Image (cartoon, rainbow, N blue to C red; front, side):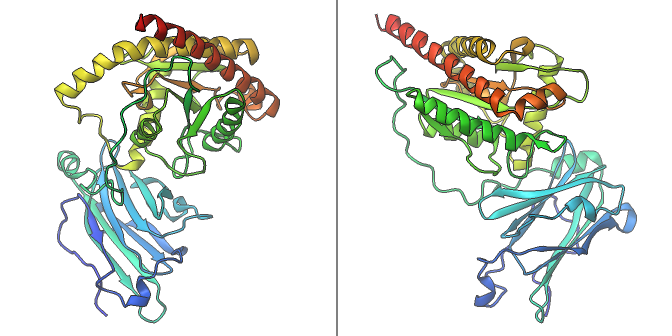
Length: 414
């Protein structure tokens, strides 16, 4: 049986998209059962001419696509219905030309394998060969060294990077600014998730910890009379721009992103509350913002340079009202955390260019509950007693801000 897909010539580096619908019998198109990778029969090793070859054995053929990304150089392979649970892709690496590998769910029904390349390696060929006897499949990829300029020019997500999304919805007009006559709607954003676990120290994973905290905070806010929506309520990957879309679709009055990061250098500890600024308050803030946004590259989509001039002007106008409200929100939350939880960072109210804070029409803050790189912070973050105090501090801060903001809204109407 000839290969379903084969390309032995040099590829453009954009994407290879394979559909099995026309190549397999009808029975084989039923992908309800997840394919599983066979790590023992797979490898990432040195190839010809200083390149790399990837061989991945799967329990069944699946649709897939492959593309490269630059800065830093990566190879990305997306699969329909491949379950990576319990596997360690890094165990496949047999070459110094690949520095790391990770895999996980990137959106419902799709998983992603990301290889961190030591240098620019262009995608030279790809094929998935099914075995008609066993029903298994073997994916082979060949990468060859490429000039940095050529690699950067060819490496970008395919135009179908937002594949599988429904048609755009017609959204209702935005809700009026809260004036105290209705419950405040808060969107809580537990950072990271899925293929992006965030910081990890001594068995504590940031994505798991902040999701647990967001759920505890949700219940407390609801008891206090708030309406609450979570950007994720499971261990799934949600791209940064999608988190803001969720908040806007929910007609959020407030957006609160929750993190517990780690710093490689220094001994930072304590809770911090961030607002948006193009200029970071300090070096640590700049490093955290860069780390958060670099993790978003896992989604394969970068829209940071897509705003046109008119859109930028309109967003800046909107922020003239939103930015002071965000600053007051941050101050209120800092006061609440100080009163109930204690142990704040030396400068607890800071600013940086976090992408999730860039919604021009929703007051937004990012709360670093602490640093997993600090032993004392880790002990607090895993303590239900301390988390309850931190939850109480956030509820108090949001309640105080809501009352102040409603009063100011009344003054504006007059």
